Amino acid sequence: MINKTYSIIGLGKLGASMAAAIASRGFKVIGVDVLEKNVNLINEGHAPVEETNLENTIQMYKNNIEATSSYENAIVNSDVTFVIVPTPTESSGNFSLEYVKNAFTEIGKSLRDKKEYHLVVLTSTVLPGATRFSLIPILEKESGKKCGYDFGLCYSPEFIALGSIIHNFLNPDFNLIGEFDRESGDILEKCYKEIIENDAPNKRMSIENAELTKIAVNTFITTKITFANALAETASKIFGGDIDVVTDALGADKRIGKKYLKGGLGYGGPCFPRDNIAFNFISNAVNESSQIASATDKTNEHLTYRIASTIIQNLPPSPIVAILGLAYKPFTPVVEESHSLKLARLLKIRGAKVIGYDPLANENARKEMNEYIVVIDGLKNCIALADGVVIATPDPEFLNIDESYFGGRNVFIYDCWRLLRDELENVSNNINYMALGVNKDMKKSVQILNNLWKEEDSK
Image (cartoon, rainbow, N blue to C red; front, side):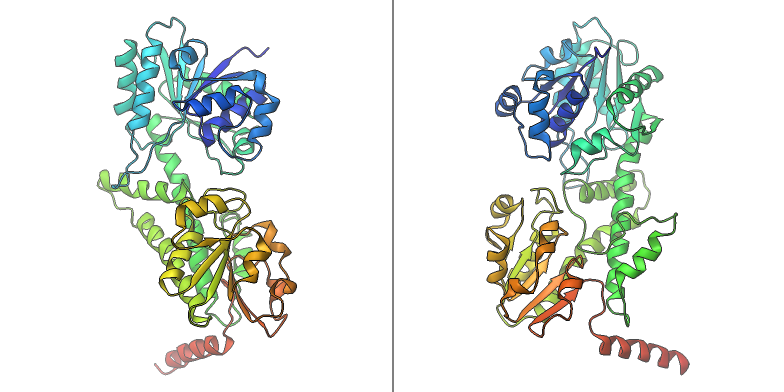
């Protein structure tokens, strides 16, 4: 029989989604947030933020969820607390602990008069040493109790993707458990066994190793993405080059795998860029070099400049360029660190009028970049105005685009994800279709390689 109650501090995208996911498994959940609006929406059975399936899940399991602004109410009436508050990136690349410290202060105060053992789980991303040397002392000071004796603590960040948080949380590849002591880890492992839907393994380790693992995962993924993107650049210059043919073969090697090995626009969003920069920060802080992380970051930024130049070179002066896909990836309204918007700014600087469309992110793009881009409602409306069209995200809606969308006009299409290659490549003299990572200029590529090997033969 399920009788454990969870509290979740912070009802943003991850916190609210975790609350809904845990409630869907039959547990009682108490959410805490400083924003009265978020508290009220949860208590009314509505999602406080936009995320796939969040509204439906909260409505379906609203009897298992309540929200409050009172830390004391949440801590006293729950057994395990997940802390999921922002840790913004500072100019140095470090993560700010301001909000976590505030949360731990309030949790500590609430633990002071609680007699029962309580487990605190930090889910917010922090860097190695932050939990043990900065945050645990706050809990001990404010509670007057001892970690590992009166209460337990784990560092257990989630590996989720916006647009699929609930599914990712309930079906992880693994659970990362950084444990202060064995008892804390045992309790959290049992919690995950009851909560998650799949049979994911639990990777238990020290807090510091878990803190390092979290940023290492995303740093590795960004390196893999950037390698594929750099490979796409090279493939586009090779006679008959095709990045999809190359990565399909590479991904068949079990040591490499196909995931994140695509070749397209650079990585963005709220996690990948900052974790990569943070890895560079912590490496430098311990007097070690992280040239790979630094090079990955620089290469990721360079890619957008190269794409902007390619687009401008294939269009008349002062063109209208439509960017399709404004979020940092499909299925989310989030535009943070979106390379589509970075591309819009670069094209505007180079003299283009930039318009754009996204199935979910139009409003956020308007707020973020109204000086650089005119956001158009409707895919066909956007395309109808453009001299050039950029497929910037692999959103399924864009698969519907065919020759009829262009009305016989002369148009240049730059497809970053090769979504429309079968539909539009060589279909009409009016459509100049170019796919990222695919060789378009056979004559030039032959000349480059011919000259290379002629020079080699002459040595």
